[in-house]
Image (cartoon, rainbow, N blue to C red):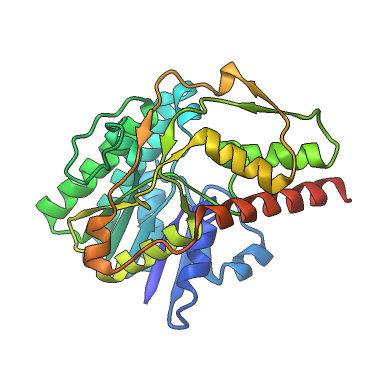
Length: 321
């Protein structure tokens, strides 16, 4: 089995590589615009690693032509909603045109390869409080990132229907865990708490909107869902990858502070408050559970403990203490 992961150097990509190589028969290839050192390539058990700009069709086609994968997991993306507000054109180019290039190259070079196209729950916009979002909910993108993911999802559906390309789409809800970049909310809070604990910054934590409700999963559960969907997902279908449980952001922050053992002053940072954001985004995992049997296994408390522990270790490495 030969699998190509685009975006392998990213947060989810590294976790997915670790998950897939639990199978000794897996031949794993990776591609990313970020470079990977020799040690990291070995840690990810990659047979090959390709430098790749997914917005460049010839690069994408060349990578697929050389690796000849049976399966492609397309993770490469500009994943930050806040960054998409500042760089909407670049976000659309990477996320939508990048997905188009992967689909078209697969159609031309490996038309029988399963393509797992990883999209986002942001395509749904803001849900109705108290109601879990199903896959038949309408798209209501409310920022540039969400719009780019709507385009990606729609392209996947088009290639599945018009070209019989075996495309499986995910609409993945919020997830976190060890290794996530601090520019994302929970990882950012864990990073700030770790720096406060180390005495590097004042005892205050900067936050955005704390009243929103999010369905937060653990990245290790999420990549397990991706691995299972590659084997059991129905080509042409879309699946929510989510827990089905909503968490008020303020409560998640309180839990992180309890794990850290102290509660600093909370300061709302205008730069972290997005005017175009979802108030309630909780998914219904019924479809993926019925199709594949996947269920999330890691409770949010363990996820947050591991996230904070990872942040503490990173700060220790940075400071040499």
